[in-house]
Amino acid sequence: MYSGNIWLKETNDDDLDNLLGLWNNPEVMKYVGLPNGICWDKNDIEKWYIQYKKEGKFIHYSIYTDELGYCGETGYSEAEDDVIKHKNFGLEIKLLPKTQGKGIAEWTLRKIIDMAIKSKKIDSVWTTPHRDNINAKKLYLKLGLKKKEFPEYLSEYNNGYCDYMELKLCEYKNPE
Image (tube, rainbow, N blue to C red):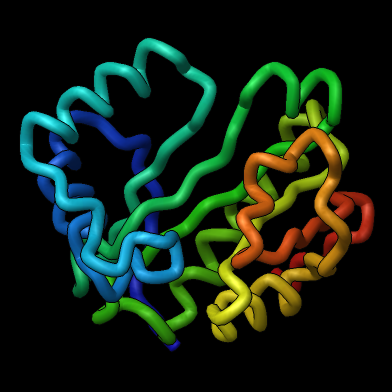
């Protein structure tokens, strides 16, 4: 397990080259349905960033460690429908291959779940791991997420290749 410092930094334009490398990495993106990576260039990621800042519906963080530097991304949706109507939001995480299997994803997701609890805006978090991504599903189970049927309002995420997993925040146990 990684024993150095891990931190989250809200993504800004200084992180775009790192994101581009992450999203263009076929090994990272295979479970997102992009086996060749996203195939973007600098212009594409800058357009994404402008739209991301304009919409303000998704909170996006870059993950760093002392020794490994940039590790990946994480975030959650604050889309009005999710937060107000459904009292939940979706989680996301992607790590570079060299940083996987070191406990960084678990630390990061626990941090995001703690943020959700402190916000007092929502009752649960959810994610949709690819059915073949065994390591991700093991991690989500370890965090307390449970496989459930896709809610109707999230049917756009039900592509036939993903599972829906959810955690009621009142059931969450952080070991720290």
